[in-house]
Amino acid sequence: AGPMLCAARVAVRASTAGARALNVGRPGGGRGLASGPSGRHIRSPELEPIRQEMPPEGGYPEISFESQNVKTRGPPGWALWLGLTVMTFWGLHRVGVGNQQRTANKNEKREARMSIAPYLQAEEDVTYHHYLLARLEDEARIMKGVKGWKVGESVYNSKDMWMGPTPLRHPRDDCGEK
Image (cartoon, rainbow, N blue to C red; front, side, top):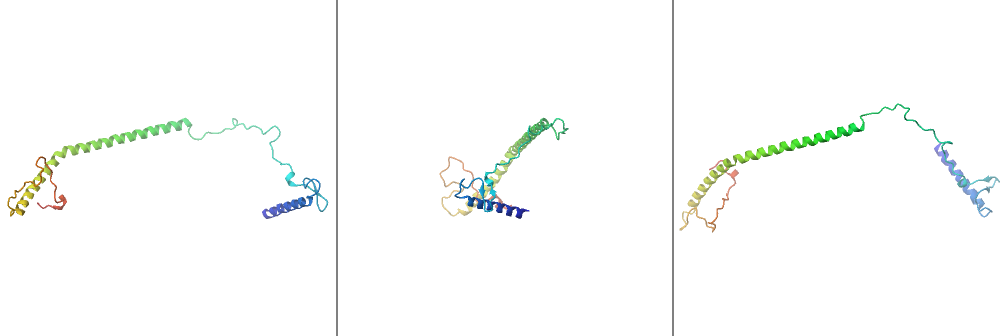
């Protein structure tokens, strides 16, 4: 039906164009009724009134929704909003409780580190003392042939302030050696 319908449309257009061509130069200027080769009158489809489907006289009947028994599905809107609000505040409460627990854990860890800091400092002082004695022994052994050398005396002019040691070795390089 599709190709035949297209062929029929093409044929109608062609006949209409031919009828208009025959009407050129005649009275009426090729508009309206035209006399074709067979003597029949052909009306141009462009001049036909537009047919539009309209509602019946008086309009369509009203649809009554009240008479139908329409069941509601799901909870009412206020219940959805209430549930959403409760879940949001419960979630925010859980986030706040989690933040408090995390802060308490951080404070406990900091307190533990601060409580053992003196012991760690004492261990570091002992390690520094052993390092200083070893350095002085090495200095005395290396510089024993130099006249006027005083072991442990600084060669820099920084006698006013104490400068911490700069170890030549990394603590992990010791591997248990002393």
